[in-house]
Image (cartoon, rainbow, N blue to C red; front, side):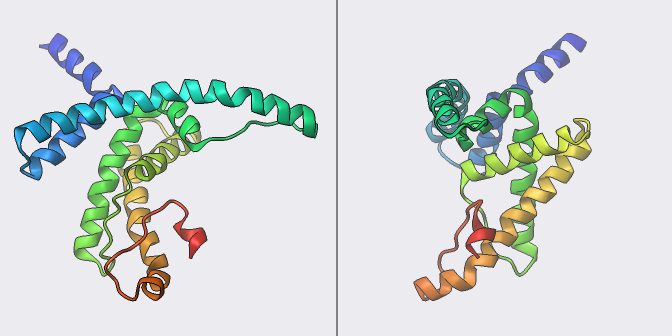
Length: 192
């Protein structure tokens, strides 16, 4: 029995599988067709693997630019890329990222249902960035990977995903003339 439990834990702590399982549950809850459930779950896992695999390629491609800038500008540093940074971080923090994202989505839906902020954040890659950076910051600050880290990170993310579209909504209303659409982006605070 212990061997089966260890196998289960080793499988679900793989970030691509964990994110695929979250997608699977979401598709089942939406009562999608079996073909859509299978397709969506596989696409999610493959997409996650492509993202993390592509990070190495992107990092290698940006390395010559970083060297050129350092020589030309007599500066030290890196050429940042959100996608590359997050994909690299997912190698070490992927499971925490996926779980924080799951809790954040639940908190976002809960807040949208029970508060005056009726915003559901649908920008998946931005949600993953926020989850990943949240995990990295919390763990780097000394928090141990635990249910508390996942819950606090999820509450932070879910609240951020609910409140930041509300900050931009008065401006969106002026632009569109109605409240039919809101903007969900990691830059919402700056935009407002």
